[in-house]
Length: 380
Image 1 (spheres, rainbow, N blue to C red):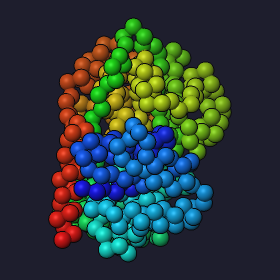
Image 2 (image 1 turned 135 degrees about the vertical axis):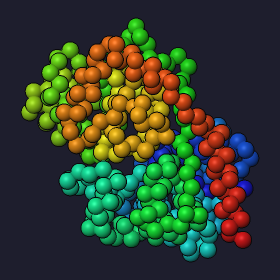
Image 3 (image 1 turned 120 degrees about the vertical axis):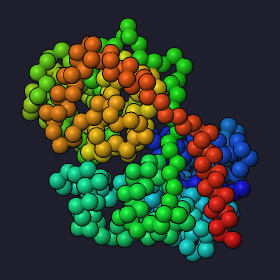
Image 4 (image 1 turned 90 degrees about the vertical axis):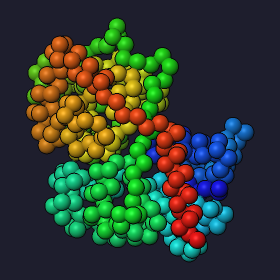
């Protein structure tokens, strides 16, 4: 089977979608499928190398309109050769890919990993709400009419729409008017701890860690406000990453006199980050909503306790998780302080270790092979 996978980002760029694209393409290729990946990039990615089983077409970023046009041209060319066309992105790659497929008369499937409109709404400084509230309160009708129109076209034109959680699948089926037979869930692969990386009891210090993009959706300011509420000077918050919110977050730290309690560190490679987390006391993810975040499964794999936003869509028993209300920094502070009690901390670690949810890369690939077979049958 000849498979075209379209994505917005690809390694060496960091991020879940980039890792997912590479992992899926590599594994499908090993099963003797002919795979081509189409991606945006900051520089030309070698189309094929000796150690790669699949090809890559990279569209080097220069300007938005130019990017979309050149991506469309590449998609139009590559889609002609493909038996199956699949997008891991539903806007920047999904829109030009849809246009190419419509002109080629090709069926395609698209994977939805986040909440593009909602994230843009938050990034523009609007009053924050969770993803569910963004739709339930009708806010989605008031913003980004053109973007919403294009996204709706992509989702409804797609033969199948894939989600990584049942909750988001149900939510988007309702608000984008999708057909039940056209949607399905393929869970993200559950990571395995790299050899030699685990929560080391002898090296655990007093650090509470956040790692990720510094963007509005992650609600990092509430975490900083929690540190204002949190009176103990023993515990330190470490923010690992970068992004458009960084300057404002640094300014807040200075204004609130948190310099001694909060530090910033640059982004790390995947393994380096896991090694860093293995020495953390606690990981905190205070996002307004986080859709089945892979970081939590990585914490599970290496044994790091975590606190997470209550709207997280994880396929885990929510009653066993310590969750926070993203609207109330004081709630974050209370939950962190609760876990500074060593007996409570150890009991929570045991609770987290008792949770099991299995979904390997083999399961992910199997789900996609079934999807692609259905897509091929549907085009006849």
